[in-house]
Amino acid sequence: MTEISSLYVFVLENKEILKILYGIFILFICSIIVYKSDKLFRLSLYQGIRYFRNAFLFYGLAFLVRYVIGTPLFPMLDEYYLTINLLFEFFLVMAGFFLCYSLVWKDFTKDIKTYPLSSWFNPGISIFYAMSLVIVYFDFFYKTRVFMFFSQIVLFFFVSLISHNNYKERGFRNRFLRFYFIAMVFSFIAWILNFLAALWLNWAISVLIDVYILNMIIFSLVLYGVIVVKRKDT
Image (cartoon, rainbow, N blue to C red; front, side, top):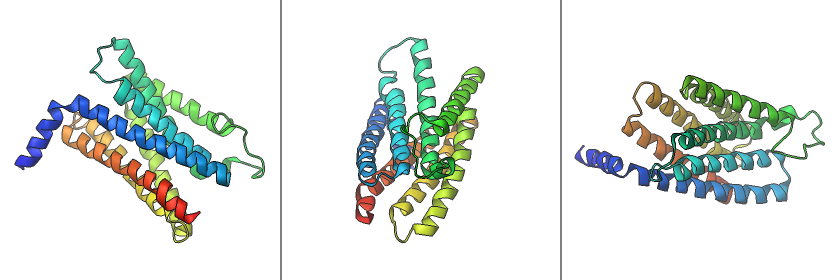
């Protein structure tokens, strides 16, 4: 117990520096995932990989904005921090939608032989951009993050179900799906913990540490899948 208490004291005393290191760690992983998945897409031309790549670009932007550029170590105006928080939430929500779309894009493509020229702006993705802006607006208007938490909990619940079905159907032939399914379940748990920490636990440091550790595990699992497992299975 003493060691755990000492850990919390250390985190509290160095929380801003640790946040920057945490943000840089996730940003670094996202950069590699984007680079590797872009190469995989160019080799396979599988459309789902395009949206998977986009998701982690947006995750990288979210962590860059919030934990590196938006660190309180650099004194800024309140309006600046408001902009940082709005951008962080938009990138984070949009990344979740991109991740979901990477699994269900076929359902939005009537003619499987005709693909959108852009994976950034097309009819299907435009809906998610609009939904993300609405979620950010409501959280800004009501001065909360409940809408973001609720949307991502629901989203990752369905993403976990889809990932589980994919793993059951093709898991033995594609080990990447096993790691992907685990990562999505962990993401679902992380969003629930975030929601509890925000609404009922007053951002308890013990819960936030668990969330940060869980997030690092999630992104590391995805990175491992992209670099090692996917390479062996293709």
